[in-house]
Image (cartoon, rainbow, N blue to C red; front, top):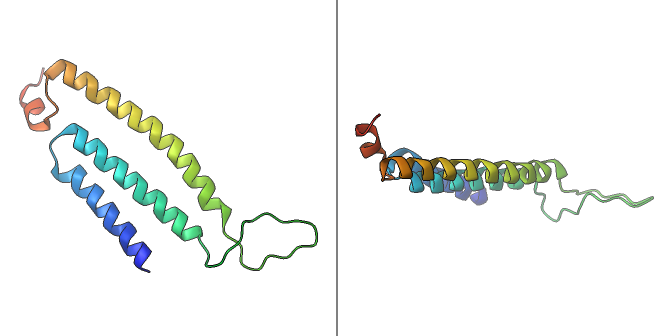
Length: 112
């Protein structure tokens, strides 16, 4: 149970960074922390105490098997998250080239 609370705490830290920080780089880091928290939660959902890998041999019976579906989802989410992060960083670089700042409040004042 404490693992789930730590995962929620990590998610809340990332959410705080996204909602309260005004620097685009800090917001991107907050999104990364949120992504890691969600991936950790998926892995925790599929975990079993003393669980074994879901690899079956002939005439073998495994009673306590780890669920492989969350692991596959997390691998897919990591690849998608990397692409999204690269896109966001590229957009942040273009914003910096145009406005000369990463501060959102200054960018809103410099419209146009």
